[in-house]
Amino acid sequence: MRALLVLIVNIWLAAYAHAQAVLPEVTVKDIPATKLRIDPTYARGGRSAQIFDTVIYTPLETRKDIVVGFTHNLQISEHYFVFFDQDLKGLYVFQKDGKYKTSITKLPLTKWNKQEDGYMFQNFYLDKATERIFVFYNDRSKENDKWMTVFSADGQLVKSRKLPTKIRDMSIRILQIDSIGEHSLAIAHYNNPKAKSDSILAKNHFYVIQDWDSIKSSMLPVNMNKNEDPLYGVEWIQYFPSQIVNGKTIWSRNFDYTVYRSDEKMNLAKYQILLPLSYSIDSSFYRDTAALQSWNKAFAFFEGKNKQVQSFSGITEMNNWLIFQLQNRTWPAPILMYNLRNQHLIDLGKVTTDSSSYFLPLKSWRIDAVDNGFIYNMIPAYEMFQTKAGREDAPWDRNPVLKDFFLKQDRKSNPVIVQLKIKPNL
Picture 1 (cartoon, helix red, strand yellow):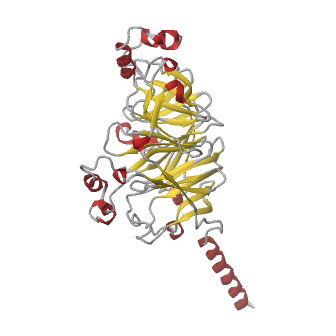
Picture 2 (cartoon, one colour):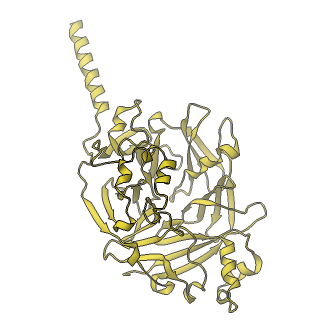
Picture 3 (cartoon, rainbow, N blue to C red):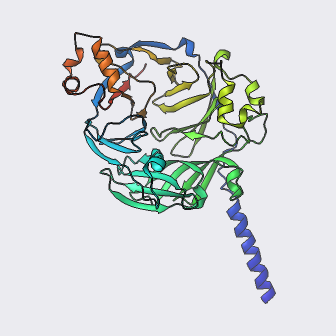
């Protein structure tokens, strides 16, 4: 009897271990590709009023102690703008009218050093429902454990918790989360497929994670065939997610013209971007083992190949538009808008300012955010004043906010956020 009991227990344990090692049966294996033929040479432009329905300028309040510099990862909620500042090493919160709210410049690390650790703030998430700020970072002093710290919109520390080891090396995009981060649903990419700590995670690129610990499903199996995925095994080339727009996230990686779109229903779509030969990476790059050893060596490969596109920066999808920046060696790098419905292609660099935008700049050198039907760009104050110096008619005086900005601010003031709403049926 005892032997039979032992046998039953061993069978149950083996079955349980097998169940833990098998991913749910919703793994996406064959994803049809939508081919997008895009030729930047023929991208059109136009006047601001022809492309955009609405243009709104919001100067950010300037204070002696708060003058932001190199900003990154602008996120928007109903009441706030939040972004990371690389020079000031912190998160900065402004109200939607441009008034300064607060800054967050310290994480609850045992050995906090702002200059060395401040970069950790760049990986944050502003939840639109609660307007709380979730910061994800690895504590190097504690075996590189991954932590999540929650702040209120006024900068108060709400909660800090250590996350499971399983997601330590994951890039995460949150789909749902409660006010303190206990319960969540997220899509993630595992950044270290050769790690032996969890063999399950080496089999697919993307995972749906519930409550930070439970893998609910997996998507896009790793293709171990170098002929079909020439970047397989190149550990430093990883997928990175765009900001979530209307529940959709675009995942892309360097030197790859195929990108993946995930949505809040856990569906995965694939776009294959076909560029003209003059813009495409030479096939010899993928056979150059030396070039694939590091970013510096890959960068050196493109010396003199200025038009060849290495990646699609900030790629997002909004209202049938695919919006992205071509990362190559031209300056400024083209920012394109491709209409998935009618194949219209617009180059923002060819859109000229007019009376609808007070003849002021519409963009700087990149797109900062896409949200709720709007494109958001942060224009440095010096660019605004440079434009002002070239015009004596002062058309911006028709706008009280801009008139006040030019009267009271200067070239060293905080940037101006411009919101651009694309015309429907364009």
